[in-house]
Image (cartoon, rainbow, N blue to C red; front, side, top):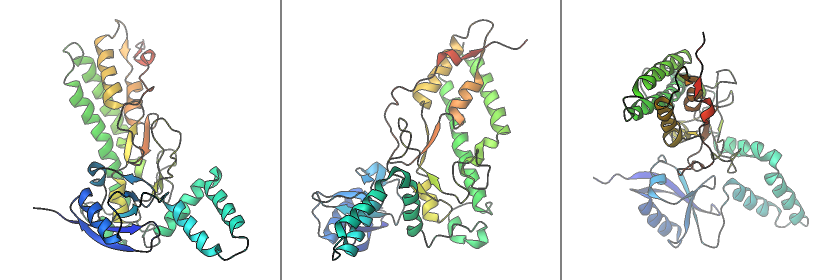
Amino acid sequence: MVTLKAYKIQDVNRKKRTGIAANGFADLKQKGAKKLAITEDCRVCLEDGTEVEDEDYFNTLPRQTVFVFVRPDETWEGYVTVLKHATEKIFRAMSQRDEIIEQIYDFIHDSESNEMYSVMVELVNRLDDNIDAEERSEDETWFDGLSQSFNTKEDAMRNAAKSRVRKYFSNAREYFEKASKKAQPLLSSTLDEFQDELKKQQYFGDYFVRSARQELRLCCDKGWFGCEGPYNEKNCLKLHMINPYGSKESRVLFSTWNLDHVIEKSRQIFPAMIQAAEKCPKGSQMNWKYFFGLLFTRKNLKLVHIGCHVKGEHEGFECQSKYFYIKPKR
C-alpha cells in the first residue's frame, strides 16, 4: 500500500505556497515542479537553505515540512534570501536603496550578529508555538504519539536523551561480542564500570532538559538548541537552530539531529578498546574513564543537524593510546 504524506511547497519568491501529498522524494519533486510550473531540473531545499538531494534524507523529515523549489538560475540561502527579497521590495523606490540594502546585508553577514539573526528568524517562524507550556494539560498536541506516562515536556525530553545514551552502551556491548576470549574479561569489567557510572549520571538525561544546570544541558533555559557544526568545524555555518519544546513538529524534527561522536564510536573507540583489552600490560588496568568520556560525555559529543552530519570517516580524530591504561592504586 502506497503511503502519502502531506508537505508544503513554495518557490523562491514565496509568491505561491501550496500543500502537496507525496509518497517519496521523486514523487514530491515531480508533483511540486508541475504545481509551481518549474522544470524538474530544479533544486529542492528546506527553508533554512539545506539542500535535499536524496530519498534517505527526505525520509527523515516530518510531515508538513516546507520545501523550496529553486530554478537553475536562482539562489536560495534560506532566511537570508527571504530578507534580501523583503529589503529589495521595501527600498526599491527609495533614492538611498542600494546603500540601505548594503547595510542590511552587512548586518546579516556580520559574524557577531549571526546568532541573534538566526534566533530572530526562528522566533518569527514559531510565533504559533507554545514554547513556554510545560504540562501536558497546557499543550496536549505536543504529546501526540508519546507515552501517557510523560506528564511534562521535560519528562519526554529527558527520556529522549537517556535513550540515546543507553543506545551507545548497547552498541558497545554488542560490538564487544566480536572480541577474542582474551579480551572478554577486561571488556566485561569495563562495561560494568560504564553502567555504574551511567546510573550515577542518570544516563545524562539532562542533555535535553531546559531547566537543568547550564553546564549539563545542551540548550538554553527556553529550550533552544543550536547545531554545533560538522565534526571538523567549530561552529555551524548554516546557523541551524530548533526548539523541540515549541511544537510536535519541532520535537519530531529534533529527533533527526545527531549526538555525533567526533572521535568515531564504531571506527575508532570500540576497536581501540578491544585492542587495549587484548594488549593490556601486566600490572596495568584499562582506563575506563578515558573511554567513558569519549562514548558518553560532551568531551567527544556534538549536537549536529542532519545536514551538518558527516557520514564518512572523521579524518584526523583518533583515540590516544597514551590514555589506554592506568596503574592500579595501592
